[in-house]
Image (cartoon, rainbow, N blue to C red):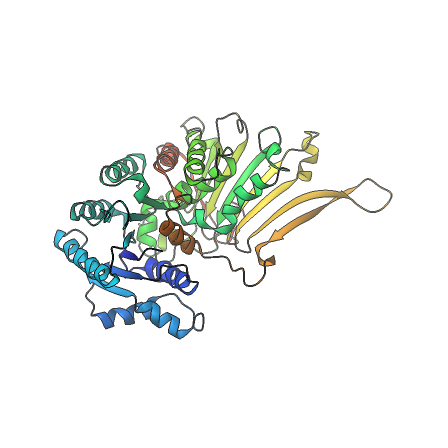
Length: 461
């Protein structure tokens, strides 16, 4: 592998310590990083080299005994720090000199991977300075690619997303841009495509003729914690609906790609999102429920008169030949009875009689926790009657040998960015189509009653 430098803007923040650095450490221990690599942290805080190394060691989310101490030490030896301001050109010139010095120590031009672990409000300024500084120009056609990793949320509505995307398109090539939705990198979510297309049993049934409804549910027992000010400005729909949940919907509902590669998979995901029927003033009351958990207004950083939702449930419709008429229920909430992300696909009962609705076959993909795939079916109860009872066929990821540990989603994100595989990253068309649908809901949000629900509740409706 070509030598690679990872540049993390906002390395002193929560994401870097909780996810990015531990994932890079894991890849290093697994020998999935180039032999020659470096990590350069860029932030406003002042550190000496040793102070920064101590900071990294204390703030990196690594459990005692998780790795050999010498591996952790050698990994930290690859980390450097550059103090600077995100909106000052001189800081980028100093960063460029730091990267050149590392390249000189490598004896060749390295790949550069820029990760924006900063508030989205800083994205545009960083994009412009990176472009103007020349930092994102590859060394040549043959070596030293440059790529940019951008965290969600990508925009705040359809207009800001379009503006941000236009700026990205002006400054960088599409193959340089990696928009992160880490949910796409979860192993159980990726397996939806493999399970569906590798097993001929299911694909003939994957349509409106055989599927009654689809329910996608992402719920958590926890509240907003210390994210009060941030969360209150966006709410549940923008926080997880526009990205995680719509990406799960797209994976379930997409057409079979011509080729199982990044270009075709992303194209089919985008098509599904473009077929989502907008929510209007005429149907929002029958299709949308929004709620707020009791006591939310007293959380730190939350406005006294807030109308921000911590729960939503939407009946979505896909207007294409495969899915027309099939309701897709998408749901998420904080302070619920459990923490679980699950996709349930309900197959129609052949008799079409609602009396037997409870005897539907249900296919479940559990994304987290305890990742699994299970199918509910009915068998005859032993004896002289024709009574039936439910049974389950189940596969759990824990059934794999103990050494087959599921990689963390950020490990997969970073690894794929290194090798240039954009399958697990959202495209321009996906982002804009998702925002177009979500914006149709938000524009009529105020007409939907805000239900106050009790913490720990299982179902709001």
